[in-house]
Image (cartoon, rainbow, N blue to C red; front, top):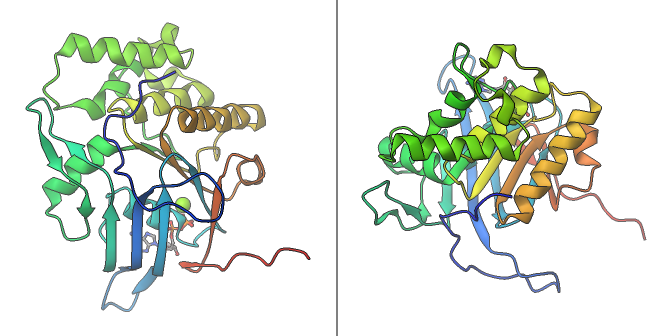
Length: 267
Ligand code: ADP
Ligand code: MG
């Protein structure tokens, strides 16, 4: 469906439990995120979280509203920095058109903002609950937006964006302003946009929140296709359609910013 991701995970440790070996792509160690630190409204949204996200799998961040899913997802995607703790990425990020390696993998928590921005743009694709499409622009222009300024020729970028829209059955709507699109169409544009930089990791935050049941099922199938194409997928959701779909290879349950221990299995 889509090209294989260009920033590839390094080979990492493998599991010993008989399942297929999994490579760790993202490792969080004792990560905490405090908002409004030192003020009366200080709030700890993520509280001492340690976990790994495995390459090529779908990881679910599941928990009630306010449990810290969005905050955790944004830390994983280099959109925010932890207040304390460490975040390691085991992936290589290339420079733009100039070639070479911009980031060989390693700790991101303390990198300067411009590095974080580069890693975020090249290695991650984001699908948001509210789509976050730019009104007044066409579907095609919205898909192309995250690719600026990569130094790629404009017509090549345009062709790539058109092909992506076609992948999602949206070729006929490429020139439509996004405010004219239905919810399902807007979601497809948002998915195409998330893939324009060929990211290793796709992060979807409550991706079904504004979709009806049948569109939600389509979205879940698309996320499964992304995994089949070799991408790593992180889905934050408290929608039973997602959590009970079989899409999630692994579920991380959150409550009050902490990871809950796995539920005991029946004897
Ligand atoms: P979820 O996605 O699971 O609903 P969030 O990560 O959005 O949870 O939020 C977790 C908690 O952190 C919530 O109580 C929320 O109000 C708080 N929070 C999130 N972002 C901020 C912020 N920028 N400033 C202050 N509090 C925030
Ligand atoms: Mg949220």
